[in-house]
Amino acid sequence: MKKDLDLLMNIWLDTNIKAHCFISKDYWLSQFDNVKNTLNNAIVYIYEDENCLKGFLGLLPSSHIAGLFVKEVYQRQSIGYQLLRKAQQKNSSLTLAVYKKYSST
Image (cartoon, rainbow, N blue to C red; front, side, top):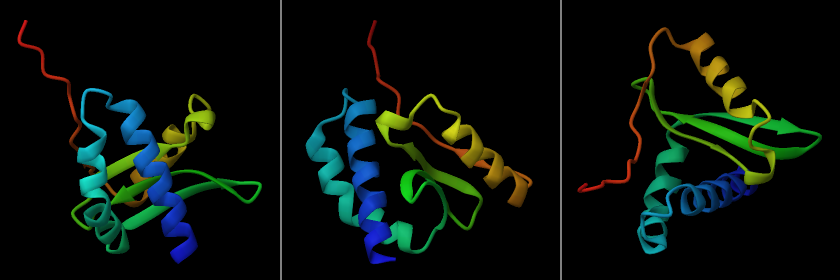
């Protein structure tokens, strides 16, 4: 699991930095250990194909989606959709919070 956790965390960090360019990279780096600990206590659905980990969804015990991440090279291939469907099959209700760029205009 340590190897898988390291791979998950690499996907988590890379995806967040690229998807949230309006948030400092330092913020994501400061959250790294906290997220790693949270993943240890989460239900994690992994999308793996041909022995390649392509994405994952982390679900907290409260049925809250902590995050959905797909390696950039595999995005737009329905991997995120499939991970969400798997979580929906196991949970009658899911919640999610997202980051949004704030604009004063």
